Image 1 (cartoon, rainbow, N blue to C red):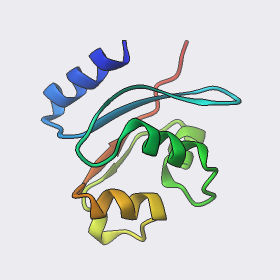
Image 2 (cartoon, rainbow, N blue to C red; image 1 turned 90 degrees about the vertical axis):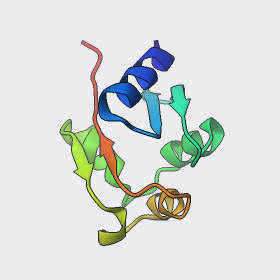
Image 3 (cartoon, rainbow, N blue to C red; image 1 turned 30 degrees about the vertical axis):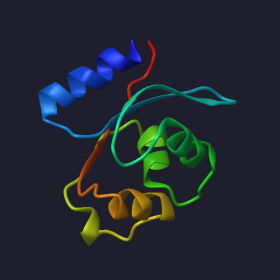
Image 4 (cartoon, rainbow, N blue to C red; image 1 turned 120 degrees about the horizontal axis):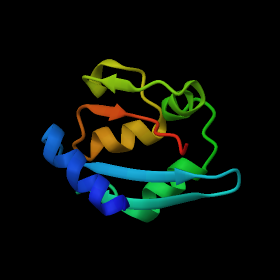
Length: 99
């Protein structure tokens, strides 16, 4: 299911990078990924790291989507800086909750 979501996300938004991560209380599982910027192991490490200032963590906690139109214009965390250095310039984070 993760790979289908990744493919649809890329098609609908003309995205070049897409990741689906599933979170439980104790683990992070990468359900799908398409990226030239990061691999599944690298993104899983970032998401499981507990980086206190991670913007994606606020998205999960608040349950609200976030669009970053230009990564060069924000104070980036180390993970965001790595994505930026890899060529990513904008991102959309969208929490989807299991109902």
